[in-house]
Length: 348
Image (cartoon, rainbow, N blue to C red; front, side, top):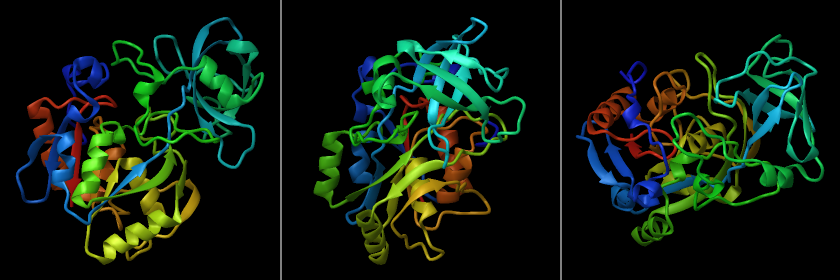
């Protein structure tokens, strides 16, 4: 069911919850566990849905204003989405081209120059991830700016948005309360599972005895086409987080990841027995039937579209039946989708 359902337009969250009069932690939270009826709560109730000793792991990656308007060499307007650096290739960026109407551009060509604001320009160097491809929606580009790249992007860029949003929210709407700025390029799109977290929820988690640990995983553009697998992403699992995960597992407590990003990072450094080690780099891990979760046994997540590769990850953590029950109930009860929508807690 979860790979073939139809998502009605009315269930797309068209604006941040605050614009609907709902605080960050006031979005709905569906709680699903194997063999039990689903429960309908609010995100502020997350602490009571977990047990003392459980460990919640969050992603502290911030979000870049990664969409920049430009002009193609033939004069056509274009929007450039900066996905992040090319793995192991210095001074090259993965970019996606979109029309002003947010449609994908597939007719880019190697050597094409896109004029950008502030005296900057981008040169399309090769297709990505396969540099030998003649056409592609993603490109490896050289971007020349006047001054530091991130500072330029903060000045001229805006958040990446899609057609279901009725307005263009500001960058702060796309950053979680646990986000930490850094010197490296952060996420191109918000690690949105953590958006409903609030300072109050974090305080009540601590009061209940639920631990909170941190990882970093910087997301690229999320608009995968049919059949595409997730791109490699940069991650970092600190030693203190690995120690906290291993201690919680040794005590028989649950490891609950806030988002598919956290799940991907933890499972990248997981051994066959579920223990984890500190690590950093690029991960190409894709969870699914051939690679179930070893460490993560709970997941806070948003709602994913039909055919999304993330659905395989959810099933790898919580099982097909639990995920199917959650999605059937969410559709029936009118839960909202996308980055400003409602949430789900899946427990194995």
